[in-house]
Length: 259
Image (cartoon, rainbow, N blue to C red):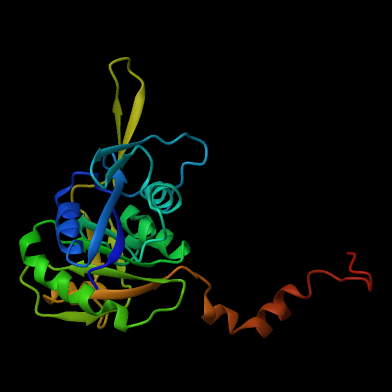
C-alpha cells in the first residue's frame, strides 16, 4: 500500500495545519503531492476559474500553490502536475465541520467531488474547530487502512468529520440538516458607500436526528457519510404518473411533435 500516488488539497490554504496532518498520514501510503490554494478559499463549493487564468508555483518539493479554487487545484494536479492519474485524492483536513447542507457550500467537499469526477477514489475530511489534530492521526490511519475494502458507486465520495473529543469509533451516518443564522451586515466605507458582510458569529445549528452525521459527531463518533453527486430526487421521480397528469394537460402535441 506504500506505493500510491496521492493528490492532496484543501480550501483553507496551502500551509493550513489540517493539510499538514493529512500529508503526514498520507506519506505512510505512498507519495503525497500537494496542490492547494494560495489562500483561504472556504465556502467556494465546486467553483472553477473558467474566466480567469491560473498561476501555479512549486513552493517546495511536491508542494504547489495555486491562485485558484480547490477544484482548480484538483484539475491542475491531475491534468498537468502529476505524471499519471493519482490513486487517491484527499481533501482537508478542514477547520470546522462539514455536516448537513455544508456539503453544498464546502470547498473541501467540492474538491473531493472533482476528484471523483476525474475517476479517482476521493474523500473529504473535516474537524471540529476546537478539535485536536494530533488525536486525529491514528483514526485517519485506520480509515485509510480500510477504505479501499468498501467500494462506493462511481459518483460517490466519503465525507468524514472528526469530533472535538477523542473519538469512540467510526459511525456511518446519513447527511443531516442544519440551521444557519446567517447575518448580512451593511457597513459604510470611508467614502460613505455601503458594503456587506455575510456570515454570523453564532455558526450553524445542526439537527441531530438519529443516524445523522451531526448526531454521530456530537455523540463522540467520527461520522462517515457516503455522498453522491447525482442530486435526483427519486421520491419525486416515483410520482411520474402524477407529474404526467398535471403537466400532460398543459400542451397538446400534433403527430409531428409541434405544439
